[in-house]
Length: 221
Ligand SMILES: C[S@@+](CC[C@H](N)C(=O)[O-])C[C@H]1O[C@@H](n2cnc3c(N)ncnc32)[C@H](O)[C@@H]1O
Image: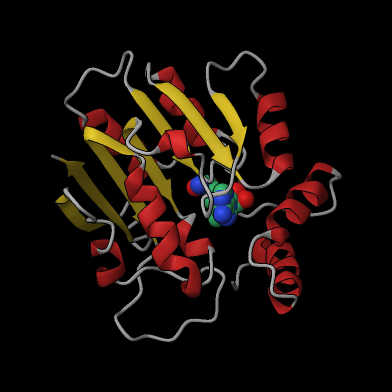
């Protein structure tokens, strides 16, 4: 992390990771942000433009479709899914993120839940027509990547879709995270069992040519 908006997250993450706790810093960051003493670098006013763009092109009806937002943070993208008519569940390991999201959106149709991607509820297996994973897997150390990736993929229902948005890393490149951006082979690793890649691309949101990210879409047979 290099941006000044990342300073609080970097400090808390370093302490947490040094103590062998890969996720504890998220709660500490959200608590500090709620107190006004830290900045959550991914807290933005608008939903992720790459998600918005994908959903605009989404050819299926949304109403009644079940969606889940992985590592939803403060709820910006989950709210967008809810507004589009998805029956939306959004989860985060950080209790304060979930509490803050509920406070920010008191009339939300979204079901906000505290849950850990590394041990998700069993009933979420194969339960969602649309699974959205945006920069959460990359926020976990590489040693947890295989389990995090598999747990995201398992949530996709038969016929359902997974969209993954992530920073890009060259194969073999060393990185001192967080974040730990994804290589092409780590993107391909979401294609578990009968989850097939539909489109894997490196894209930039309109007007942000330097902001290139993976956007990968998978569908279960
Ligand atoms: C980099 S932030 C991204 C937040 C949001 N997806 C976005 O795009 O703005 C990663 C989020 O994932 C959450 N998270 C990290 N590890 C998690 C885990 N094991 N289970 C659930 N959420 C997790 C963090 O608390 C944080 O809110």
